[in-house]
Image 1 (tube, rainbow, N blue to C red):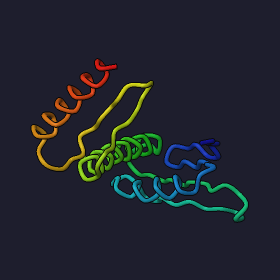
Image 2: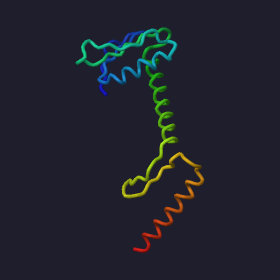
Image 3: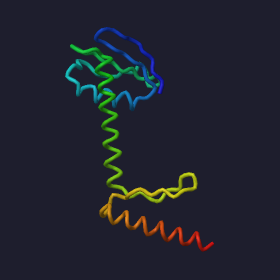
Image 4: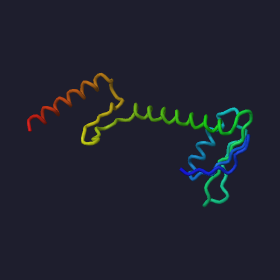
Amino acid sequence: MELKIITNEKNKLEIEMDNLTMAELLRNELWNDKATELAAWRRDHPSKDPILVLQTKGKSPQKVLSDTIDRIQKLNKDIISSFKKVFKWKDLLVDGKRKIKWDGSGNEREWKEKKEREDKEEKQLLNNF
């Protein structure tokens, strides 16, 4: 993602970015910081990149933006963790090696026992060749 700082003042920051989705994500999360007085994005024309506008009071806009990015990163980790618990993961081959991830269903002890049985059967098959 390309960023270009347009305005960098004591209480105001304007950043041109090439990703409208990221501008909207940041704008939305910036409002969760009490120091935010204005969080918006604008575009001079639909063919132009959006400009994220941030005005703050009592805290530098750079600090507010940095804190916001930290919160988004934590949220992303939480989302990934939640999806891993809900969706079933299939066997994966990575560099020719079998990698299995727990599918989140049943209980983990049963899954580990099943995996150990499958690994043992696979070794026996390979030894027969």
